[in-house]
Length: 210
Picture 1 (cartoon, helix red, strand yellow):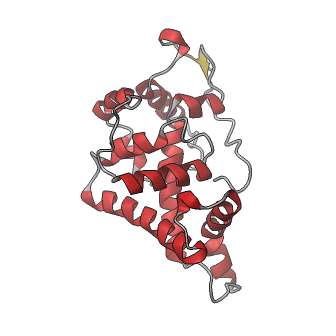
Picture 2 (cartoon, one colour; picture 1 turned 30 degrees about the horizontal axis):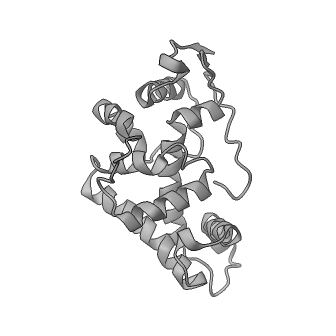
Picture 3 (cartoon, helix red, strand yellow; picture 1 turned 180 degrees about the vertical axis):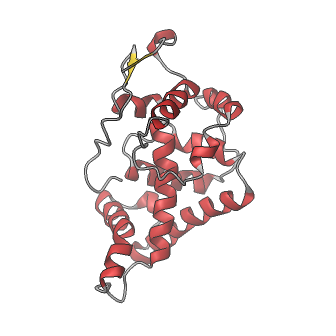
């Protein structure tokens, strides 16, 4: 266990949560669902950005990087990948991180959102936020399993291409990193008002939501 000085009201700032996650990672504890090579790790080391994160709850918040439709898509996709993402304001934090990221990685993120919307439109004639829960799960399940199916040689003619799987992995890393670096996500990993676990209990979300 790692003792912490509780913030006012028993809350941790995003900066404090990230500091403790990096401390745990330094002794070999991997962040849930986030590949070590994912660019979000680098961005979470930007102390100035973490300071700006405390303003994300403002009533007049507006995205810095994404347009309204992209933001809506991100909210829906994030909530489907990691339930609780909306409460943790994952979309707002990702938008903030993207605002200081490279143009190449900004484009990569937007391309991944567009890939989900394109696949959703092709399969169900609706954009992702308008899908019902079973359709969202079907799309995410296929995206997460694409490589395994293709590598087995059993992929059907209409199988999602490997590129879609990579878009899923890209978004999953962003969403998971943003979620588990929030107080909501940290509580899921075992954080209490006065302590943070040095090792993570692991993701508690059911199958189909990762």
